[in-house]
Length: 240
Image (tube, rainbow, N blue to C red; front, side):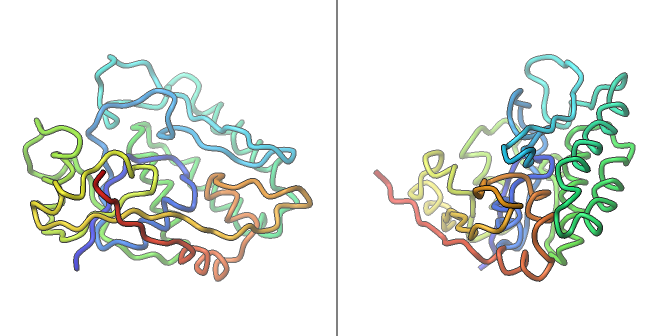
């Protein structure tokens, strides 16, 4: 059964996002929907002095209704900010067991000259997927030919149909957004992925969950992460 996932492009997302990518046949970067300020598109959280801390890649101001792929990293300060973020990652994880292997990878990823926010976020994901040996068909919604006037659930259904999918999978946070009845009308099964990644050692502090994949990479071997990618359960929504 061909399974599709559709998610907005997030920069260095948490491991649940990568679990979703690995679990499907086709992953769609939802880059042609409205950009939401204050979300996860251009920022995420790392561990800093035993507490979660945001790293943010600054974005230029655009008209309110602009799409994600119409936004760009701030020209005048992005180089300085990238250097600051890399310095913060070094300070935060210098003593982490896999720092020596992962920091050069992050340095290479962050330093690339990509100004489009969607493309930069996708780049951070694709390089991590490559490192973790995750092979999936990764495409963009903006490059698909379908009725772009459709909204929310109907738009998702149309994309899945366009890709000849028989199952649509989303993260558990989207449980309230979709109706299994509506998906079933189109011959599409609806499933939600609930991440159940087991805690891992983060220095000596109490475990802080749901941080950026950066944190997972710093404290776990590639083999251990590949095991953690399987630590989830699938939930079927029940129409209320």
